[in-house]
Length: 140
Length: 97
Image 1 (tube, rainbow over the protein chains, first blue to last red):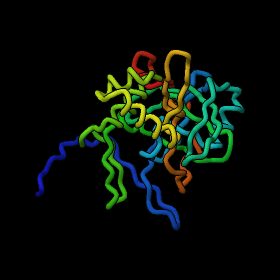
Image 2: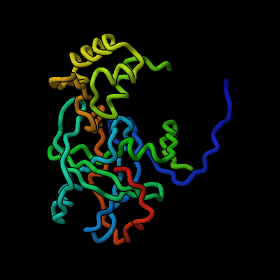
Image 3: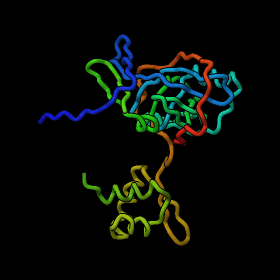
Image 4: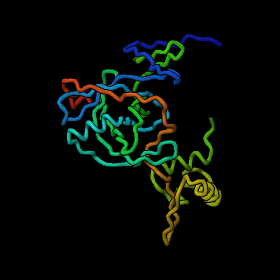
């Protein structure tokens, strides 16, 4: 059975990330803001429906926050595929699809997982994953 | 999909730690059946038990801890840019903490 149901209105369009020997993956740009910063950090994040938090910060971004003497608001262990990773927690304002959200972002104290967007934020936005054409649409 | 007694026990425990009597009432099953389910969940490491002189309280292990199902291979956002923009209007921030 085939029925046309899509009535989405396109707001933003982004290309999937492509790297050698890795299947293309959905990624989107976002804004990271803390009152201590003189501006907004613009960074890309991997869209990961397997993460049930809001945002994981890359090592580079964690280091940047430390250099700016921004103190974490708490700590929590992140269960990453069964392994507990100690994380600092930063309350931050995240801009996504022209909206701002206040979330708790995880900053791993070990390793570098990159910047990962989880379901706390993903579930607030209407995404259309067009894997066949390697495109991610943000809609309303 | 039909919600099983086990689903109801787990969702009930997601709200707060609870004694067996409360869980069995909320799941709509008998006290003994509920305890059997809880004992199995405890063996699997899903729930933990706290015994007091009056009751046995069960709670979800690692409740509230964020989970990353798998560690992604691509590393995204290793570089970033600080742009001199104004932050959000505090009245327009949606609080998801």
